[in-house]
Each structure stands twice: as C-alpha cells, then as structure tokens.
Length: 305
Image (cartoon, rainbow, N blue to C red; front, top):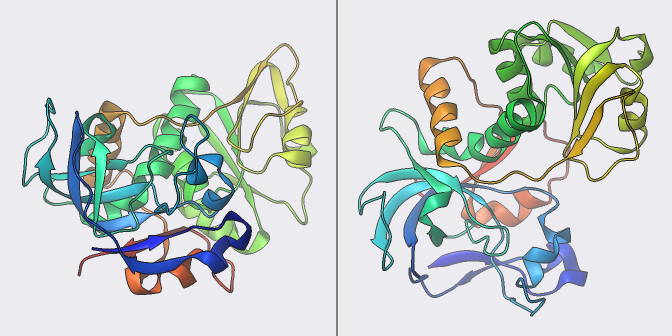
C-alpha cells in the first residue's frame, strides 16, 4: 500500500516520504480500515509518540496521521461493535498513528459508525477538532446554557467547532483571532469578536469559560477576564495562569464513540459545519504537511477518489 513515512526526527518534514508499505494486520480488538480520507496535526513530528512506543523504543519508520474515515475491511480476534464493510470514522492511538496511508489498523473502540449521507472528507475533518471542542466545553469546562465563553482562534479548525457547539448549547460566544478572520468567526457562531492584533483581551467583560488554543501570554491574560470560580481550558500545554477561585485545565482528548456519534449527528442535521481549509491527495501529502502559506481550517488528505 502507499503510505507517508518518517524515519528521522531531526529531518522534520524534509524526512517525510511517500513509499510502499505492507498492509497492516488486525491485532486483538482491532479493525483494519481502508482509508478514504485522513487528517493530521501539524505538530505531530514533535510528539514523542511519533518516534517511540510506550516503552520508549524506536518505532520508525512510522506513519503519521491520526484522523480517518473509511470502510472496515477486516476484524481482529475478539473485535465487537463493528463489521466488515461498515463505514467508520474516528482517531487512531497517538502511539500508532498511521492514517496517512491506504489502510490502517485501529482499535475498534476508537471508531464510530459513519452514516451513509456524510462524506468521508467531512467525517475526517470533524473527528479530532470536534472531540477536542466537545470535551473541552462539556467534559472539562462543564458549560451550561446562559454562560459566556471566550473562544480563542474561533476561525480555526478547533475554535470554529468550539464556537458552534457553545452557541448551540445556549452560551454567549466571544471569538478571538486575526482581524481578517472576524467574519469567519461570526459565521461560525461567535456573537462578538476580539482582533488580537488590535483589541485588548482585557476589555472583554467577565466570562465563565475561556477555551484557549494558543497558550503563553494569551492564556495568562485570558485568566484575568474569567469571573471568580470560572474555568480556563487549554489544549496548548500546562499553564501557570489561574482564574481567581477557579480552575485551569490542560487536557488531551481521548477517543469516545458516543461523543463521535453526537458530533456526526449534528453534522447531519446541519447544526455543525466543518471547517476545511485545504484538501490534498496522498501523493501531495508531504507538501500539505509543510504548507508555504498559512491555512485557516483543517487540511484533509483524500486517500481514495
């Protein structure tokens, strides 16, 4: 099968190659999926899990990519809940990756059924951003209707999902980002917008929840606009910023079949729109992984036409 592989951490994206690899085999509780569309995170080559296994042993050559949508072609011993020929979408484990390929072996529990009326490209684009937004808002942030949320990067792949889900849940949504992305953020559900290069975060009235994707100084300044007892949720790594009498939560998403089902149902209903910035092919995946210009939204690799 065709796959993108990396073998040299020091080389970064320059070391990525499109090669022929053996098709994966299904281990216990796995399924093999014929990948139709795949997604990745731009920082994957800096993750230890891209290069080593859980015992810190070298696992190269490794195949990047963690988001996928496709069709089940084989079941491992003991696998339940999915069947051969079924359309699925979801995430692979960070220590396995492998979705930038024509086939991938994934633990069945990390996948959810994909309805026939949802395109593979759309499904691959909502798996990771959708789960990140869902878990940050509802699991860690415990968002309630009537609360206010400051969403950083509200025009981006994750932020646009956060804005839409928060708006649907009955929250008042304030988005941030580059001034050029104002209208995009408003279209995705923000009711106000703060241009980070022109406006002051500190002028935002007290909010119940901040969803941070930037970290650093932005996270620190954001803590000051959270009302006492509120919550700062971040995916940008641990932060020393703390809201008064509140919580600061740095989290890494986990795959969840029920939550994936909630997300894809909202896509079907038109309540949740995808934010795809670029669609490329597997042959052009190396260039897509290292773009020459900034892309707002999710980059998806279409593996099959």
